[in-house]
Length: 232
Image (cartoon, rainbow, N blue to C red; front, top):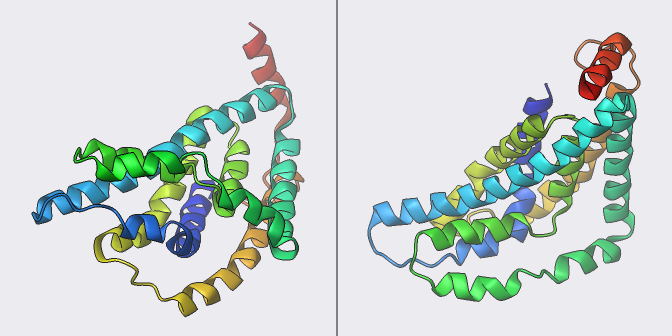
Protein backbone atom coordinates (compact mmCIF):
# COMPACT_ATOMS: atom_id res chain seq x y z
CA UNK A 1 0.00 0.00 0.00
CA UNK A 2 2.79 2.41 0.97
CA UNK A 3 4.81 1.75 -2.19
CA UNK A 4 1.72 1.99 -4.38
CA UNK A 5 1.18 5.43 -2.82
CA UNK A 6 4.78 6.33 -3.68
CA UNK A 7 4.27 5.29 -7.32
CA UNK A 8 1.01 7.24 -7.65
CA UNK A 9 2.59 10.28 -5.98
CA UNK A 10 5.44 10.15 -8.48
CA UNK A 11 3.04 9.86 -11.41
CA UNK A 12 0.92 12.80 -10.22
CA UNK A 13 3.90 14.98 -9.31
CA UNK A 14 5.55 14.33 -12.69
CA UNK A 15 3.06 16.78 -14.20
CA UNK A 16 4.46 19.40 -11.82
CA UNK A 17 7.99 18.24 -12.65
CA UNK A 18 7.24 18.82 -16.33
CA UNK A 19 6.98 22.52 -15.57
CA UNK A 20 9.86 22.79 -13.12
CA UNK A 21 12.42 20.27 -14.39
CA UNK A 22 11.13 20.03 -17.97
CA UNK A 23 13.35 22.87 -19.23
CA UNK A 24 16.43 21.01 -17.97
CA UNK A 25 15.32 17.75 -19.59
CA UNK A 26 14.44 19.56 -22.81
CA UNK A 27 17.83 21.32 -22.89
CA UNK A 28 19.90 18.15 -22.44
CA UNK A 29 22.71 18.20 -25.03
CA UNK A 30 22.78 15.83 -27.94
CA UNK A 31 26.43 14.98 -28.54
CA UNK A 32 25.70 12.29 -31.13
CA UNK A 33 23.21 11.84 -33.94
CA UNK A 34 22.80 8.13 -33.23
CA UNK A 35 19.46 7.09 -31.76
CA UNK A 36 21.14 4.63 -29.40
CA UNK A 37 23.23 7.35 -27.76
CA UNK A 38 20.17 9.57 -27.42
CA UNK A 39 18.25 6.84 -25.57
CA UNK A 40 21.26 6.04 -23.37
CA UNK A 41 21.89 9.68 -22.41
CA UNK A 42 18.23 10.25 -21.49
CA UNK A 43 18.17 7.00 -19.52
CA UNK A 44 21.32 8.05 -17.63
CA UNK A 45 19.76 11.42 -16.82
CA UNK A 46 16.63 9.83 -15.33
CA UNK A 47 18.65 7.13 -13.57
CA UNK A 48 20.65 9.91 -11.91
CA UNK A 49 17.46 11.56 -10.64
CA UNK A 50 16.07 8.32 -9.24
CA UNK A 51 19.42 7.40 -7.67
CA UNK A 52 19.49 10.73 -5.81
CA UNK A 53 15.92 10.18 -4.59
CA UNK A 54 16.88 6.70 -3.35
CA UNK A 55 19.92 7.98 -1.44
CA UNK A 56 17.83 10.69 0.20
CA UNK A 57 15.20 8.08 1.09
CA UNK A 58 17.91 5.83 2.55
CA UNK A 59 19.04 8.61 4.89
CA UNK A 60 15.54 9.67 5.93
CA UNK A 61 14.41 6.05 6.33
CA UNK A 62 17.38 5.36 8.61
CA UNK A 63 16.30 8.27 10.81
CA UNK A 64 12.81 6.78 10.88
CA UNK A 65 14.25 3.43 11.99
CA UNK A 66 15.98 5.03 14.96
CA UNK A 67 12.72 6.72 15.92
CA UNK A 68 10.94 3.37 15.59
CA UNK A 69 13.36 1.81 18.08
CA UNK A 70 12.44 4.60 20.45
CA UNK A 71 8.82 3.45 20.26
CA UNK A 72 7.62 6.40 18.19
CA UNK A 73 5.96 4.48 15.34
CA UNK A 74 2.60 6.20 15.63
CA UNK A 75 4.14 9.61 16.24
CA UNK A 76 6.29 9.34 13.10
CA UNK A 77 3.28 8.71 10.88
CA UNK A 78 1.23 11.50 12.47
CA UNK A 79 4.20 13.89 12.25
CA UNK A 80 4.66 13.01 8.57
CA UNK A 81 1.01 13.68 7.84
CA UNK A 82 0.95 17.01 9.70
CA UNK A 83 4.21 18.11 8.02
CA UNK A 84 2.79 17.33 4.57
CA UNK A 85 -0.33 19.33 5.45
CA UNK A 86 1.77 22.29 6.61
CA UNK A 87 3.94 22.28 3.46
CA UNK A 88 0.87 22.06 1.25
CA UNK A 89 -0.95 24.89 3.03
CA UNK A 90 2.16 27.11 2.94
CA UNK A 91 2.50 26.55 -0.82
CA UNK A 92 -1.21 27.36 -1.23
CA UNK A 93 -1.49 30.47 0.90
CA UNK A 94 2.09 31.72 1.20
CA UNK A 95 3.64 30.89 -2.18
CA UNK A 96 6.22 33.69 -1.95
CA UNK A 97 7.92 31.88 0.94
CA UNK A 98 8.36 28.63 -0.99
CA UNK A 99 9.34 30.48 -4.18
CA UNK A 100 12.36 31.91 -2.37
CA UNK A 101 13.65 28.36 -1.88
CA UNK A 102 13.00 27.51 -5.54
CA UNK A 103 14.91 30.45 -7.00
CA UNK A 104 18.45 29.84 -5.72
CA UNK A 105 19.99 26.41 -6.09
CA UNK A 106 23.64 25.82 -5.23
CA UNK A 107 24.01 23.25 -8.03
CA UNK A 108 23.28 25.75 -10.81
CA UNK A 109 26.97 26.57 -11.33
CA UNK A 110 27.71 22.91 -12.12
CA UNK A 111 25.09 22.56 -14.82
CA UNK A 112 27.06 24.63 -17.34
CA UNK A 113 30.15 22.42 -17.03
CA UNK A 114 28.17 19.18 -17.25
CA UNK A 115 26.15 20.35 -20.28
CA UNK A 116 29.37 20.91 -22.22
CA UNK A 117 30.84 17.54 -21.28
CA UNK A 118 30.66 14.80 -23.91
CA UNK A 119 30.78 11.96 -21.39
CA UNK A 120 27.68 9.79 -20.99
CA UNK A 121 28.33 9.86 -17.26
CA UNK A 122 27.73 13.63 -17.28
CA UNK A 123 24.03 12.95 -17.96
CA UNK A 124 23.90 10.83 -14.81
CA UNK A 125 25.44 13.71 -12.83
CA UNK A 126 22.96 16.18 -14.34
CA UNK A 127 20.22 13.86 -13.12
CA UNK A 128 21.86 13.73 -9.67
CA UNK A 129 21.74 17.52 -9.39
CA UNK A 130 18.21 17.59 -10.79
CA UNK A 131 17.16 15.24 -7.97
CA UNK A 132 18.39 17.80 -5.43
CA UNK A 133 16.38 20.70 -6.88
CA UNK A 134 14.00 22.27 -4.33
CA UNK A 135 10.59 20.72 -5.03
CA UNK A 136 7.49 20.58 -2.85
CA UNK A 137 6.45 17.11 -3.94
CA UNK A 138 9.93 15.69 -3.35
CA UNK A 139 9.71 17.12 0.17
CA UNK A 140 6.32 15.44 0.59
CA UNK A 141 7.74 12.10 -0.58
CA UNK A 142 10.77 12.42 1.71
CA UNK A 143 8.60 13.11 4.73
CA UNK A 144 6.54 10.07 3.79
CA UNK A 145 9.72 7.96 3.54
CA UNK A 146 10.39 8.80 7.19
CA UNK A 147 7.27 6.79 8.04
CA UNK A 148 8.72 3.66 6.37
CA UNK A 149 10.97 3.42 9.48
CA UNK A 150 13.69 1.57 7.57
CA UNK A 151 16.71 2.70 5.55
CA UNK A 152 16.07 0.11 2.83
CA UNK A 153 12.33 0.78 2.73
CA UNK A 154 12.99 4.53 2.62
CA UNK A 155 15.31 4.06 -0.37
CA UNK A 156 12.79 1.80 -2.12
CA UNK A 157 9.98 4.26 -1.38
CA UNK A 158 11.85 7.16 -2.98
CA UNK A 159 13.05 4.99 -5.89
CA UNK A 160 9.43 3.98 -6.51
CA UNK A 161 8.46 7.65 -6.36
CA UNK A 162 11.14 8.35 -8.96
CA UNK A 163 9.88 5.54 -11.19
CA UNK A 164 6.44 7.15 -11.06
CA UNK A 165 7.91 10.32 -12.57
CA UNK A 166 9.81 8.36 -15.24
CA UNK A 167 7.21 8.10 -18.07
CA UNK A 168 6.59 11.85 -18.29
CA UNK A 169 10.17 12.96 -17.62
CA UNK A 170 11.73 10.45 -20.03
CA UNK A 171 9.28 11.44 -22.77
CA UNK A 172 10.06 15.12 -22.25
CA UNK A 173 13.79 14.40 -22.39
CA UNK A 174 13.29 12.53 -25.69
CA UNK A 175 10.70 14.70 -27.44
CA UNK A 176 10.75 18.08 -25.75
CA UNK A 177 8.06 20.10 -24.01
CA UNK A 178 5.07 17.98 -25.13
CA UNK A 179 2.82 18.86 -22.18
CA UNK A 180 1.30 22.26 -22.85
CA UNK A 181 1.15 25.02 -20.25
CA UNK A 182 -2.65 25.03 -19.83
CA UNK A 183 -2.73 21.31 -19.06
CA UNK A 184 0.07 21.66 -16.49
CA UNK A 185 -1.75 24.58 -14.84
CA UNK A 186 -4.95 22.54 -14.54
CA UNK A 187 -3.03 19.54 -13.21
CA UNK A 188 -1.27 21.75 -10.63
CA UNK A 189 -4.67 22.69 -9.19
CA UNK A 190 -5.13 19.03 -8.20
CA UNK A 191 -1.72 18.73 -6.53
CA UNK A 192 -2.76 20.27 -3.17
CA UNK A 193 -5.88 18.07 -3.06
CA UNK A 194 -3.80 14.95 -3.61
CA UNK A 195 -1.22 16.04 -1.02
CA UNK A 196 -3.94 16.71 1.60
CA UNK A 197 -5.47 13.26 1.03
CA UNK A 198 -1.97 11.79 1.25
CA UNK A 199 -1.38 13.61 4.56
CA UNK A 200 -4.70 12.44 6.03
CA UNK A 201 -3.82 8.82 5.20
CA UNK A 202 -0.57 9.12 7.16
CA UNK A 203 -2.34 10.69 10.13
CA UNK A 204 -4.95 7.90 10.10
CA UNK A 205 -2.13 5.34 9.86
CA UNK A 206 -0.59 6.73 13.03
CA UNK A 207 -3.85 6.79 15.00
CA UNK A 208 -3.74 2.99 15.39
CA UNK A 209 -7.46 2.52 14.69
CA UNK A 210 -7.17 -1.11 13.61
CA UNK A 211 -8.43 -0.47 10.06
CA UNK A 212 -6.64 -2.86 7.64
CA UNK A 213 -4.24 -1.11 5.24
CA UNK A 214 -5.45 2.37 6.27
CA UNK A 215 -4.77 2.39 10.04
CA UNK A 216 -3.37 -1.03 11.08
CA UNK A 217 -3.05 -1.95 14.75
CA UNK A 218 0.51 -1.58 16.02
CA UNK A 219 1.64 -4.42 18.23
CA UNK A 220 3.23 -2.86 21.30
CA UNK A 221 4.90 -6.18 22.17
CA UNK A 222 6.67 -6.13 18.82
CA UNK A 223 7.88 -2.59 19.46
CA UNK A 224 9.27 -3.61 22.86
CA UNK A 225 11.04 -6.65 21.41
CA UNK A 226 12.62 -4.48 18.70
CA UNK A 227 13.94 -2.12 21.34
CA UNK A 228 15.33 -4.99 23.42
CA UNK A 229 16.94 -6.55 20.36
CA UNK A 230 18.59 -3.26 19.45
CA UNK A 231 20.04 -2.92 22.95
CA UNK A 232 21.56 -6.40 22.81
